Length: 387
Image 1 (cartoon, rainbow, N blue to C red):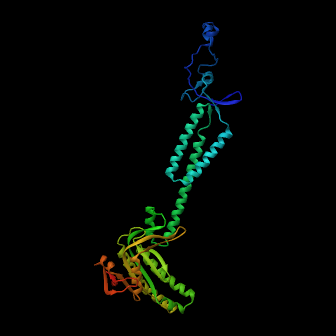
Image 2: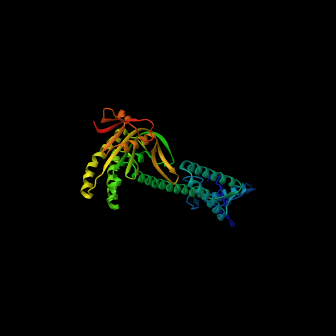
């Protein structure tokens, strides 16, 4: 407890309670019942030492019991004699110290993750206690509670900021994903917390679908640019909705072509079957689109679709500040070649797709055909319907 001593402020530790020191009644002294030699070489304090004298106070020494004022004075004298006091540090010096430490702690925890930040906070509190004890042994004291309080507030502030930043980051990523994958996939990604966007890829077994407008270039020659864009948007709306309906990932638009992958970026059940369902949905939707465009522009569009499945490298390709999520590999190239060989309104699938969906789809064998970029011919099938 701080007490004023002259012009200085110092602290001391309580070492005794009400009945610790020897007490003598003042009445006995005045009546001569106590030999005055009993006080030789002693420090005598005169004060109230009985309940009801209104000279008793709450102190840290005894919980729930007040200490008489004269006993408090005795504790102070005892501490001075035992050199068990401490001088308060200069406020400005201590404030500067706290400001510097808290500043360093702020910048450290701002960059660190929650676990090392928590460890650093605990270490700082332990060091504060150690510093207090060390300085106290040298006769100096300071308000040791201030540094832990400020450090904890800084820790909590950085924690809240990081949390809000992470929430905003996740929302931004989810918003971006919504442009590429179906809402169900976005919801699944959100639940799993898979938000890492880094360069690089992984090998996955996927299904790939390519769809392209047949005769788009000659058709656009006779239309206004805004009409061409409108037709293209109608077509892209059809293909994208079909992809999202079957939980596929919209990889990219390539002019008047669309590429989609299934089973990436997250695992998807029955993804090969979903890919052929997407192809059939696009083919069926093209019939209504055909009539709509014919009525409005006197022009129509048809599609060529290719579907393949197999291993591919899937991930973010590009650089740190500009990247695209895509799939690369022979599986993708083959799907693109199947699409380019498809006739208007025809869906071509590879033999691998046919094998995996045996008994679930209705196909017509086209036979072995050469594909650009491949040294050997491959067996190709026309997808007619699902069973």
